[in-house]
Length: 387
Ligand code: PLP
Image 1: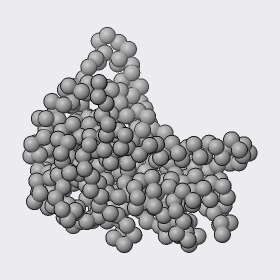
Image 2: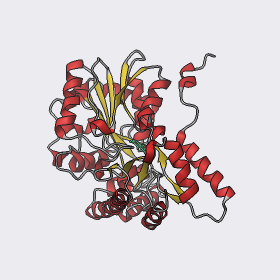
Image 3: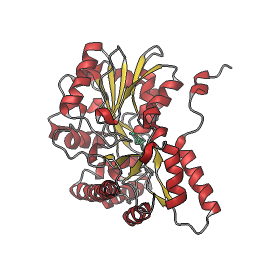
Image 4: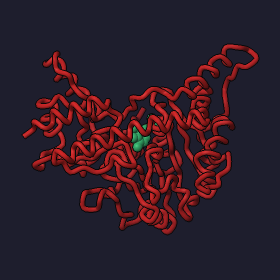
C-alpha cells in the first residue's frame, strides 16, 4: 500500500487546536482566571424556534411506519431545494433549476469534495489569508497553489491572478478579514475565469451578513457566472446549524460539471439527514426568517461593539459590517502569536492569531462576533490596561 504522501506537506497541526491548547494550559495554571473567548468561529445563539419545531416534527414522522423516511435523494429533498430557489435565488433574479441544487451536510464537506471533479495537474489560486480548508484540500490532492494577496494596502480585496490558473477559491464575505467584494470587483474575477476557462469555487458561508447594496449576495448575479462558478452555502452561520449540519452547493449545467457532480454524489454521498433538511426548510418560513434575522442582528451588534471598541483603543480594524469577523492589526508590529500570548496572559482574552490563516495574516488577529456581548464589554475594559 502506498499512502498519499501529499499529506506530509500539510501544516502539522490545525491551528485552532493550538489556540485551544494554549488557552487550556493557561486555565490549568490559573484556575481562578475568567478567560474570555473572543476568537471562536462557532455560533453561540440557539437554533431558530421554527427549525426546532420542524425537526421535532420530522423525528415524530420517523417514529411511525406510515410516515417513516429512509434514504432520501442523494442530491437532497425537493422541498428544500425548491425553498432555496424560491427564497435565496428568485429574489435576486437568478434563475436556476432544481437539479442544479445539491443539499450537503455543510460547506466544509463540499469544499473538500468538489476537489474530486478536477485533475491533479490543475493550478489553483487561493486567497492569503483565508479559511484554511481550500489550501489543505488542494495540498492533499497534490495541486500547485498560487496565492492572491489580501493586505491592508489593497483593502484586503484581491486582484485576479496575473498568470493562468484553472481553479480559483473565493470566500466572501471573507473569513478571517470580514471584507467583501463589490459587484465590479467580483465581475473582474468572473471575467478572468471566462477568459481563462477556469472555475471559481465561491464559498459564501457568511452571505446572510451582507448589508451593503453594492455587495452581491450570489456570484450568479454577475454576467457569465453560471458558466464558471460553483457556489457553496451553509446553514451553519445563517441559522446555527454548526452541530445539526446542512448546507448546499450549486453546480449550474453551464459549467459542464453538473452531471459529474451528480454522479459523484450518487456514489459517495447518501444524502443529508431528513431531520436536518426539514430544519433548514423551516428557516424560510415567515417565523423562521424573523428568528434567523433576529440572531443575525444580535451578532452584528456584537461585531459593531468589538470594532468600535477596538478602534477607540487605538487599534486598526477591518470587517465586522458585512461579516461576523473583525480583523485587527497587532500593535507595535507584534507577530500574531506574540499578541495572542500577551492578550491571554495580561487580559485573559482569547483571539485567533491571523497567521493561522496564511503567511499574510502575520501581524493580525481575528475577533469574532460569535461571542458573548458581556464578555466583549469586559474584554475591552481589560484591554484598556494594555501598554
Ligand atoms: N467556509 C467558511 C468560510 C467557514 O468559515 C466555515 C466554517 O467556519 C465553513 C466554510 C464550514 O462551514 P460548515 O459548518 O457549513 O461546514
